[in-house]
Image (cartoon, rainbow, N blue to C red; front, side):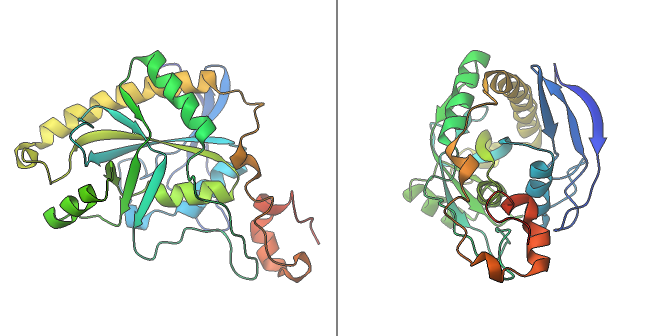
Length: 273
C-alpha cells in the first residue's frame, strides 16, 4: 500500500488459537496501524475455516480501536456495478453454526447489535471515498452466506426480493466480535461482479474478475489512506463502550479460567479477582 511503512511482523497466539497470519504493524498517514490478511497470505483459508475470534482478539491485543474491513462481494442490485464500493450498515445472517462470540463458559454478555456497523466510522470512510474519488454507496445490507460455494440462482433471486445489496462470506462474524471487543468496525464491500441472478453473469470470465479485483485493490488503498488520515484517534465512538451495560453475569461467579481468557476484553468492568 503506497504510504504504508511497515515496521514489523507480529506473531502471537491467542486464547482462541492462531490468527489467520502475522499482523503487519507500521504507520500510515502518520498513525500506527495493523494489517491482517484475513484468508492468510496466498488466500489459503476458506471463509468457514476462519478463526474470527483469534483475528479480532489479536487486533484488540495490538490496541486497535477501529477496523476498516475490506471485502470482495457480489452485487445483488443492478445499481451496484463491479468496481464500486458499498459501505454497508446492516447484515443478514445465512451462515451455519459459526462461533461468533467471545463469551460463554460462565460469563454471559448481550451487546447491542441493532446497528452492527459503527456509524461514526462509516461516515469517516464515506468522506475518505469522496476524497479518494472512489464511487461508494453509503449504506446497504450485506448478506453473509456460508460458502465456500456461491449461491444457487433460486437463492440469489430470493435475496433480491428481500432487498439485500451485496453478498459475501466473512464480515458478519467480524462485526459481532469487534462489537464485543469494543472496536469500531466498518465494512468496505468492494463489488467484483454481479451475483448469479444477473443475465450477464455467465459471461464473466476469471480475467474480468481479476481485472476488477486489481482495480478495487488500488482504490481500497487510497480509501484506507484517506480514512486513517481523517480518523480522530481521541474520539470516543459508541462501540468503544459496547460492554458497559452488556455483562449480565454476577462478577463473583465468573470462573477463574474464563476470566483469564477474557481479561483483555472485560478488565474495564470486572476487576481481576
